[in-house]
Length: 224
Image (tube, rainbow, N blue to C red):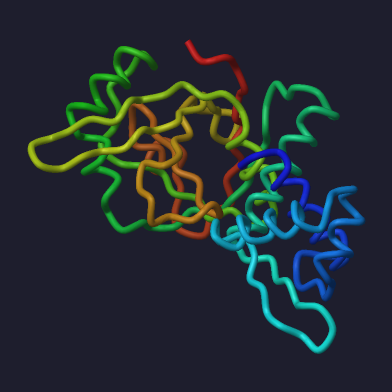
């Protein structure tokens, strides 16, 4: 998104006092931004087309609502600024509880296109499955993780099916076993889930069962 549009989105949120609705006129938005009314109006039109805001007529002016997509855009800006002001992290600590997934981890990890890259880029042949954690208290840390550099497994085609790019972060589970946190392995999992791949079955090695609390120390480094 262009910087000007992002600043306009921020000013709408600032006017609302939170991520929600702001009752204001285009003139008021223009004054807050130090722009002409025509430019501010154009920004609002573009933000609406992008799906970041909804605009509704009100008795005086209009009601502008920030959509979930717009809120996510602002959240990404916040995480980036947090990283800039706090300085680079060496690790991110995430805690979650074990749960049984949908059984697709084995399918994805076993794909030759991914296995080859795990071996070449990460140095091990992965166990066919993932350890799935439901993240609750550490959701902010889980979101922050996405803003850091990762080791990337490239997407590929397997017959008529395409497999997407996967981001990988080196990690240590319960300060005992090394593994790899993977993101975007399966798109239907939300950001409150953490998936971990390792050379062996982590449940067996660590004696884990559904509901057990697990601590994952994710190491931040420059991708190779």
